[in-house]
Image (cartoon, rainbow, N blue to C red):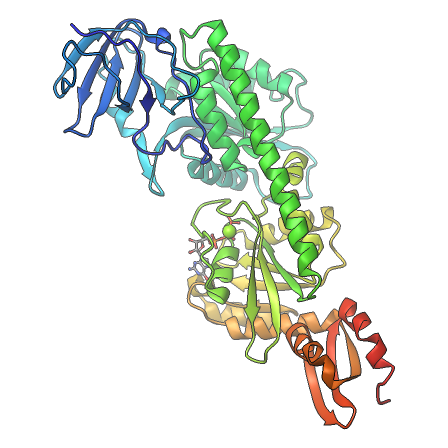
Length: 524
Ligand SMILES: Nc1nc2c(ncn2[C@@H]2O[C@H](COP(=O)(O)OP(=O)(O)OP(=O)(O)O)[C@@H](O)[C@H]2O)c(=O)[nH]1
Ligand SMILES: [Mg+2]
């Protein structure tokens, strides 16, 4: 018999549930006192450990050396090893991530296989598909956004899928006024409770903002291990979500049998992690502010891509700049603003910024979290509103984006609308005709590259609207100013004279001010 005295556990591949910083987790094996079963896969020292009676599994862990105190040193553990665990806490300085997952408590373990099947590979990462039930709520008289509740639920299902959940059902309620205790009515609570039992639901997701008290009451009403989450908070910030769900699965009520003390420790770690993330967000914001200040010394116009999530903003940026910005067919692929330089054949340039996608019902909490993007938008010379015109709800998505833009108070910034994904619509010609009929719309396919030249020209034209016309005589010893005019503005005419170069151009207002002394020498 072998006894396990001290063991550091590491996950052999990045856990999908762990936020991508060097987050790590301590596993205190005191919680698993009882027979452990280890088996190895080949000789990669990767183990599956089971604690049969408790109903938990610690899967695919590798043991760091020295790991198992064997009777003989260097003994190779290559078969099945049974042993009772006399575990000691893992040392503080060697925390390693490990995934603990709950096993269906059905006594005979016959459901093991379907449980295994729920681990899915998504974007190269393994995700446990938690069973989710969606609840849409529509407040009567809420007419500002014209999404039908069914469509909202469809979108919520897509968000849930993006976050790696398995949607097993959904329901909705139209509310005149929310119940102060549970938000939804008691009949609805009962209906959801039966669905939870029928589908073995693990998470109930609400598509609205509920108070913490209402969340607690609902969790109590649903009973058991069911978690109640808010779509807006949890699934629009996937990075946070991953961390929360990971931690919650390990720390919050879901893992039965954990001592109170451990939960307290877990909560402290959780708070620290949230704090770290907040700090990180703050530093991104500061960094970008400094970057923007530097950028202003050469006033290249900034064009921001805005639009509904999944509209194709990142794809467009990649096409125009060869930038390798993540674009994926999932919601909220982009979480940080990214800026690239676009150079036109005529020598002029603009900076193109990719931003976080919008979504209907953007809550105030989210607006705060996306400050980095919002600041970027508010300091742009032009907003390019990218629309997925192949989407059946394109019009509603446009309205939702315009509503958010209005809330952000950026309506004075000129806007150009782009109808993207024309390659995907059934009748592209009809769409193009419609775009022509309306003003300021360019049809493109960011995927195939169709219409990109027209897009750049339209951007230039629009930028020209926000520039001022100048005529200046630039002395020969100020040659660098001439190239800057070419870079940031649109030159209409240059002429070499005895006293310098005469330029007629459109330039950004701030740059025109720099030229003021030379403008005094202007020809009339
Ligand atoms: N058929 C077609 N697909 C496109 C086009 N543009 C983008 N896509 C696809 O649409 C999906 C979303 O594209 P992204 O560029 O990630 O969208 P986004 O607007 O950046 O999304 P968020 O970052 O989530 O806001 C990807 O699968 C792209 O390949 C297009 O012109 N035609
Ligand atoms: Mg994107």
